[in-house]
Image 1: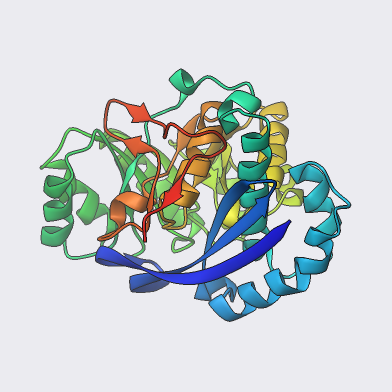
Image 2: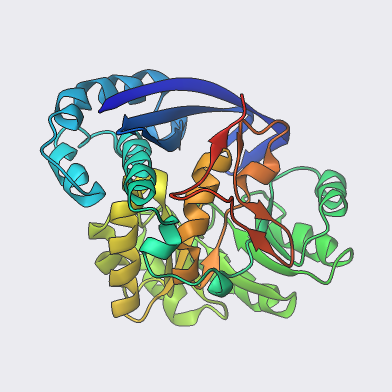
Length: 337
């Protein structure tokens, strides 16, 4: 068994802005797990909002080496449990390792990951394409650059409704909106009425993650479904979101990987909640991993690699009417540079 990792810079096609940050380059960490002639790939991007850097991610991965190489695990789930103490404060690093373990494990089984999980790729919902905060003119230009039937629109400005009204003039596509914690309960309830008339499907994380009283009001009075993101980071958050949100958006990077992601999806379904998996602007390594579990979901946001100027990997190919997995077993993504 061999564990290695390295850092890469992912250059974006356009500056990507949400309510609390902007970036032109997304740092990422790639993990390689090799055993018996097989090699598994995993990925995690960095995120200053959550305090996750290349340095502390790599430090956590280094700290896990003895456990990973001990041989005291057979399945990805066993490795996740074995290492959870090391990664207690760094789920981003654990995600990359867990993803690589799933890739390696399913390759050893001679199966694609979705085959091992007994999932049908024909059931994968269409991903949205994300439009970051910008001038309305530039947001319209981005929609024209990528003509897509389903857009996620990032909001969190002083003129959010005006943005959606203007964008609606240029497309008949369905909109999803993501305020990234920027609104009050009063705003979310009020906006939901007009947004519904503007063919918006749902609102993602309209309020701050700790505004539970506000979310009770939004859940009760909103004209649109509300989906948790920042309020649902790890498995223990799912139950807390029941009765406050209609569904959850699981980010594998924040949750700690595919292993806890699958648990969160199963629990949400058992509570009658909608399920979604979102991305954190990963390359085709992370995006292809998401695609393998996407048949479990009601909604999916796996457009990260589509936002890159230069992808470092080759993997799942997504169009507005098809999804094509790579030929290889496991997750199947391959690094190209």
